[in-house]
Image 1 (cartoon, rainbow, N blue to C red):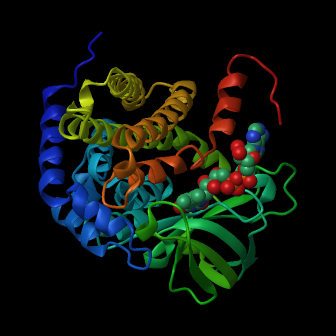
Image 2 (cartoon, helix red, strand yellow):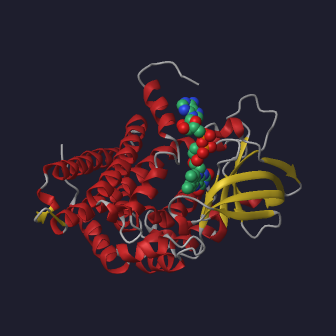
Image 3 (cartoon, rainbow, N blue to C red):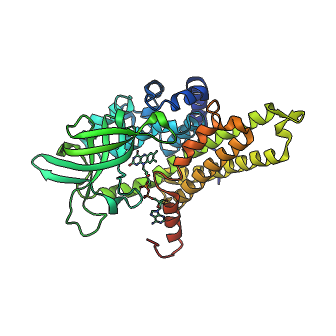
Length: 387
Ligand SMILES: Cc1cc2nc3c(=O)[nH]c(=O)nc-3n(C[C@H](O)[C@H](O)[C@H](O)COP(=O)(O)OP(=O)(O)OC[C@H]3O[C@@H](n4cnc5c(N)ncnc54)[C@H](O)[C@@H]3O)c2cc1C
């Protein structure tokens, strides 16, 4: 049993940490985040220069190599300063490199992976529909009709993050309406955002404002057969094995937020004065800091456990659900306590606590709600499915 990261991983983590402090400090992240109308292209370009888009993509496709542990470390370090904006890196990494890498044909990999690895291609995920995200397949009304040489998409997606600046959308649609079960007859498409009939509109929201989350309308949008990912009608079965990875990445983003919260809270406690001394001497505030530090350590242990198991190809399904649940609840609770510790300044747009709180609030809802995650954990205890 070894709870320490191997040297190679520690070196990578330390390099990213130094990079974040120099290239993506909190002040800059705060300024970028609040600008709802401007996607942070400068941040994307810095990721490109640093080679981060290539982490997790093999050198054969111009990537940097690296496994899920490496991606977890990168996600955590980015989120310490960037909070939810770390997802600027994560979306393309997940929607692009993961999906093309797993389901893409040899030709699709050759065409798209080098462009993703070198920051030339942005991707977005368009799965959720206005009719429902939790019951995604039950509510799915977007259809793909077979036509000569490809498919025609019609329907609407919602909350597709960064779709307004993306080059490609990873879309799931109902391709066989006669399928017996709702999980069957679904196909994954890799849709250029320049396709005629694809209309994208940003939505106003609470956090990660500059990232932009959008509604996407497909109005008879033609997608050629060459842009179908994997086998038609089998999308759901292809996606299931990737869910653990997604949960681990969310766990890493949440832990990064806890890191950022703790360092800001302790700093403030050492500087801010009340009743003739620093507020850090008050036991009630020390207890908040102790709780945040405990959340940090327990989340880290669970995250490292899941990433390590996943990288060794072991089944980590239930634990990855537990990680997502615990990490997102911890991150949001930590940010909430951070605001309390800083008083009015924690609520101010001048400091980062409010940003950490707003951003981490999402991870209790997406990419899957914590109620649904609890359902999965409960089922693993041989309890009946509740829905
Ligand atoms: C800022 C933001 C960014 C997002 N980015 C993306 C993106 O890039 N791509 C994308 O495809 N989607 C994205 N999403 C969508 C996100 O994944 C969904 O919001 C999420 O899956 C929940 O779906 P819903 O919002 O439709 O909630 P609903 O499914 O309507 O759920 C409403 C409530 O009912 C509860 N509920 C539903 N079913 C059950 C059940 N069986 N048991 C117990 N409780 C239940 C839920 O837990 C929740 O509390 C994003 C969302 C937001 C807010």
